[in-house]
Length: 241
Image (cartoon, rainbow, N blue to C red; front, side):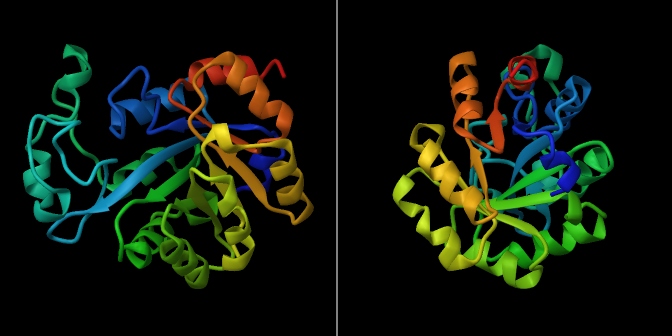
């Protein structure tokens, strides 16, 4: 990620875009995050049956669209027929599942991307797409998969890569894998964890913090990035810190 971005810590990361206001992982949510001034936006990436990378959290389309089925078993054309916004409200009816490239083009020069690789075996293509779209240097790539995180770091050692985890006990894996950041659930984050990471010139990135008290607590203990569904609130609270 850009060093100038990290100079203004903690960095507010809009989780799946401004997902408290707009349907997650849609261009509407990312546009809203940009309107709010979020310096970074998180998205999730899966691959379609015809090899296209798309922004969607779940392995299936059931929860966030009017369709059913596995993303990996559907073509991009089939996914484009689905409504990914109506579930959030009539104002968002007709929103589509965007491609990774589309999100890159929207964010380029305006916000950094925190790219969560959800599916196995797509790390090479994700890195290639971020590079082709000119946003790799502005991106922070994360995954729950140790193998995926390791692969991204092997491909591009200069890219910021983090390991997602719900357990504090996984902290040593960051050093073992040669990664740049630990990304625990906020409930697992501690001041000691932040001190250990910072002493090794690594980052603490926490998720998903949606209340004022939690935001202030994460900032106080030393979190470098704070991911929230409600970036409007996070920006308001953390700009006062």
